[in-house]
Length: 452
Image 1: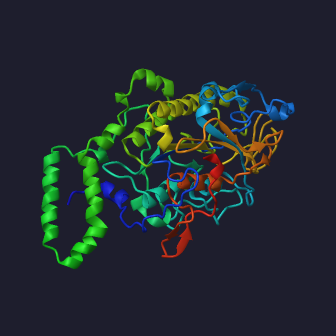
Image 2 (image 1 turned 180 degrees about the horizontal axis):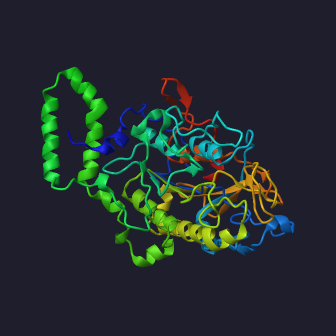
Image 3 (image 1 turned 135 degrees about the vertical axis):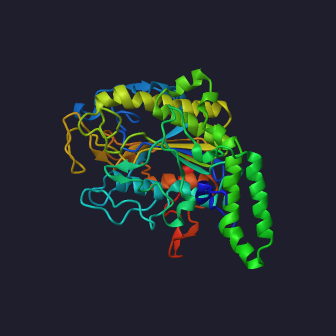
């Protein structure tokens, strides 16, 4: 009757029983999450975990700089983050051993769903997204802890997850169905954002839409009791949420970056990543539960243009292109959230699917690497976590002298995902039902309680 395409992504009512309060450090401290997913695999040594005393073919071209945390250094490529690192925790011991040639898509799927894919080609790539995939983290949160009010529960932007022609693997609701998919805002927030599906059709006023809704209520009241029960669970509530979104200005306003001061937009950076980080803050401020900001490049794209996949050339692209954008966007996001009193209730996680090989010019994934290139390296890399109960100004774990493997407190990336659920007040061991009505554990990993 109302023709609302948003209804499909608002099918949120088939929820399990309320979760029991589990307690423990950090449990339930976060109201929302911003996941900054650095698809492509940024070099940990050249960004977060410098190794100035390592041999030349490991330490690279950059020098370490001091941060706002005493005794902690980051690369010279991140001067703005260095000033706000006292708001965050660096996890310098993320590590896993892949099965076979574990390239971008397989690693992305594991990071975002918590499950290892079972169909990996010799190249490490996968088949396209399938209805029986495990749901991505934001879809799990949408189902288990939906956002309240007239707001989109889960937004993914500004481009899809992608390696070559495999697009969106690990970025959908999988066996939950499209009702729990994110709202895909695959647009550049540094340009005008078009929100036709969040706007009233031309000539249709809010009052007219409300009258249609009241007419639908009258029709429902005349239905047999069984039909009403079916309709209530399968249609009307989803349409009501969609109607509320369209009529309410709240969702549309959240996407309007022109309402932000020009100076603040400049601090975030007038580029796709920076404006995406600003939009993420506006969305959680308006009530969105989970925002995923993907690095705006194909995972295995050209590093001279936009990608972290630095097989052929590592240092020039990081210094001149990628790190200035990452530095301005991420550092301002942390500071802006904190200034507004939002960081305590918003967990921010920045992580890629893996790091980069400490030794340059070697092949670890079957790819060819130049003398100044770094290959995939899942055996040790760095993540950043902040807010939502996460300790401030802390380094958790440590890598060895060359950044090759953890020296202490090794962390599988699925434990970071488990920590996100924990911070939101979701038991990581909650049992969910798949498309065959079979029970599956939300994630088979323990949260890192020491982060909180």
